[in-house]
Length: 256
Image (cartoon, rainbow, N blue to C red):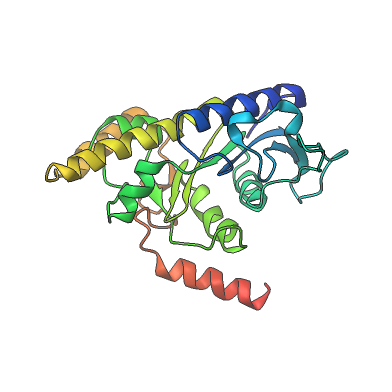
């Protein structure tokens, strides 16, 4: 359980700093992606829609309840227009609902991670030991239409189990107990994808054998995460989970 929350002012500063870092490191485009920090049991501070992340100010941050209700007066952009929460707000809310230990969510568009999955690469494979320590297992969810209800409906099941999830043809979601942890996982995701892309270009390499991967997880994560347990009900990490996406779309279509 998350036991401590950032105060609103600190959260605003941290989000603005992190957004600028993500932009300048080219882990997202100017108005792409979104970040949030939990500042109470049912309240989060989040980036607004359509604002240049490299120029984001603490005063631009929007505060919302998890149900989407905005708290206080809407902040104003540089042109004086009101700023609204990201169109992917529901994804952030869902992450906090399914994981009380999450204190921050980062949705970015890391280019190498996206490119590797587009080229058919499987980031769930363990080619280097460091990824186990930094990310656990990198999952790739089935494709969902951005900004629609499909995204939180599908990603919620993945975020129950994984701290790093790639959304095909879209971007990534990394979570952590705080913004530093979520950012570190984004960095590790893109660094890992860069290595994997290079390996693929050089002719490929076999993954680390399963027994050694299990030993790495035992060292890095003594409390085994759900996807490493034999009785795991977690969705598949390789994105090939047609039954899950079909069930979610059917549920959304029925209004349940």
